[in-house]
Image (cartoon, rainbow, N blue to C red):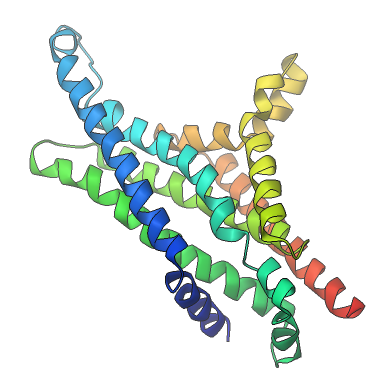
Length: 249
């Protein structure tokens, strides 16, 4: 049943122009960034040749591409997740889902999986650019895989948060703005650290702190646990919110 809900969600996404527009626009923007980074790499070649342990293509082209992709996902995720449940509530179709023989957990996981399938296509589309570099040079496979892992964990967290905020309202616009606000706050929260104690707390809460560490190739269990807890927390809150909504209606 979870897979059926997920495929239904994915099908409805591609039946709307929004998904196609997002894929096309984002691909164009990131392709421009990719070629700009390659051009920058070639312009730095004279300086790099004088360095003993000069950074390679993975550090100067692929890593910046992944960093900018994370920022783009921060803006795209609220647009894609805003209708997940709020649209169902607005049109009244949520009642049909709740009256069917499926649990609230299955509904949440199905919608989450459907959106993750869409963003998996998104990441696959983006991955073709760095992978194309294999035709002319060598890449650090470990850092490349770490970058893909970072993007996957990041978008998994974004979708979980967006799903929860979409369950709180029947207005998709409010859900999108609220999701963007929350994600942006968690993105920059460590910038307000005033001392070592608060800095440690805000650094742990910050999404970018954990994401950037993985992109650099430093895969720490603390970062993985952070994303797992983040995702599970917001999915759990979504299930609880739907249970509460069902009892009230």
